[in-house]
Length: 192
Image (cartoon, rainbow, N blue to C red; front, side, top):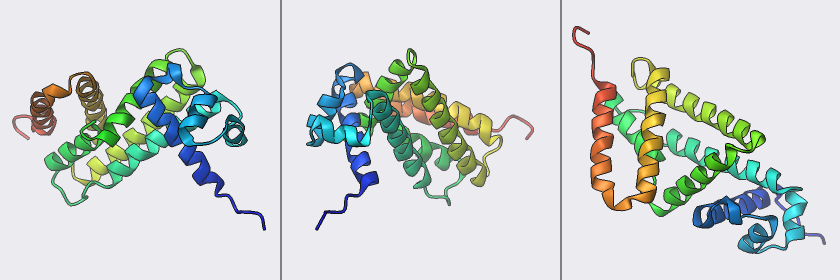
């Protein structure tokens, strides 16, 4: 009797292997062959799910974006605006091994996207989706100007994530900077 294959799960496992490789070695070392080896499959088996390396890269970028959106959705909706902002920022930062690997992979995707229009378009769409998820969460928490605050949150997150990748020993100072940024984003102008 033929075995039933969960095609979406197989694709996710292969995409996760690419994310691990991108985090460990950057995208320059990623190929169908290296992803196949990292996922415990033959190159032919990987090509049953992804015809080209580009298709595989686009899928892995989507997978990384989904993971970020899941973490955003996991933030307690009952938190006050300042704590919501801080919690949302913390979900995006490389503060554990899983998020560190994802941040390294995301950085590799961003650099690669500068020269690959299809990946750049995929990244822009993912950015819009993450921005929308953040703005909705901020609006639900009563944050004024949730769209503009989401823009600022993404900028702070990107900068802190990059610094945490290459200077993990500065974690305490960078988390203090996160708190200053959250305080600035939640400060009410005089007279309001």
